[in-house]
Image (cartoon, rainbow, N blue to C red; front, top):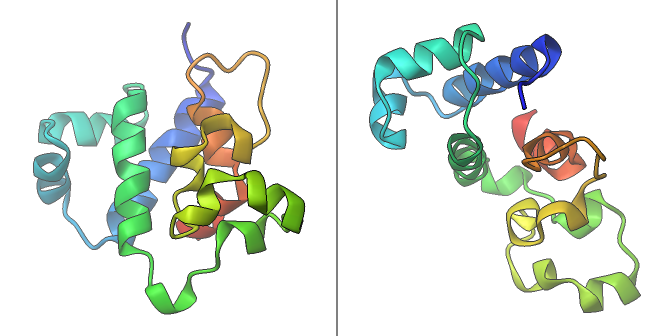
Length: 131
């Protein structure tokens, strides 16, 4: 399934934003992700779809570089009830990788989303990490 131009544009902006937030050049990011510099350039220009595994790596990188003093827990961002917190595996984590631990549970699901990454990118926790 091919992505819409809008989705490719959103992903290209996300790649650029993460690279700048973590303070890496395209060359350094390509080495960190194990892809060619041409791939990074293509992702940033929207010429090439960002594979799901690369987007996940980018989001983990963004979360790792997110300033610890500014971090809010996912349950604070999502305004979870105590009942839902007791059931949630994220309450055992640092509260920043809930989208990775629980997948679609932390973000609104879209019927036509086959790889799950679009829902992750819309998740309020991921949006805060990217801000």
